[in-house]
Length: 330
Image 1 (cartoon, one colour):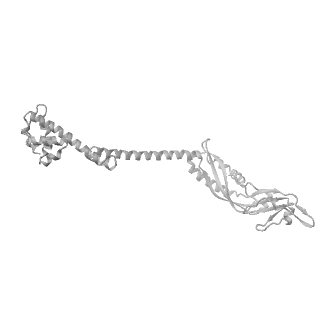
Image 2 (cartoon, rainbow, N blue to C red):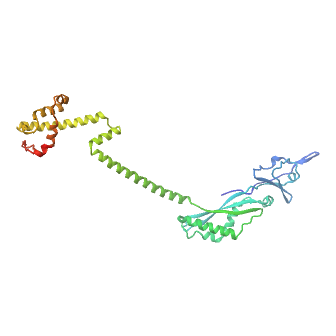
Image 3 (cartoon, rainbow, N blue to C red):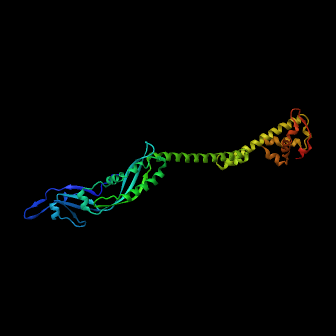
């Protein structure tokens, strides 16, 4: 991480403007901009003079007129990161140990005189003095990054405790240590996580689909429920259901009528315990769609259902009626 601190800018200054019968004056436009939290430090001969923050320059100040150069020094404290790459157990991967330091300028003139502009580099060089740090990750795989975090934190803190970092004109304190997650490792684990999640979602959807199929299969096995379900879901209207129901009944009645006609042809119709003639007429009217006429005459068509229920007792091949009193009684 590239951060310029604490000297933000340095600039050489030429000779101040001379004025007849008046003190020399330097143009303020010759000076660099001074951001909030920073001060000017002027080099006057071999000395460095701090321009106190808050005062307004006029350009006629003695130190400003005689200055050979000016430095802009940031005095506001700053937390700076120092990144150190150390090898892992695999040559394909490195660990990046990031140590954070709280840095504060205690003497602006000292850092200006030294031209201290790259404190992050000095922090990294300080950590490199720990020879054992380079061997810290050689026995750890990149997948064991959490273990490496514990090791790195303990190692850096111990090193900074034993070997105090001293930078003239500054106060530096270690605040925290972290090991960055490599992009490749993050991408790998992200794909694994997404794959597991996708499998869980797919399994849940399949389970729900199976339950839905079984439920619908149970409904479809019963035509009345299937018709009701289709109506609820706006896939079929009531007129269609009624028409289908009557069509099914007419088909059933036609089949019974054919059987009765066969029995009549073979002289077996009189042996049925219902009024066979009137039953034939009623079924004929129902098949023809004029059921209301027969019903008005008081024809009992329940005999058709009895004949249908007693169907297995009729030998259709020989057209003989085989009495079965128990079944007809039903």
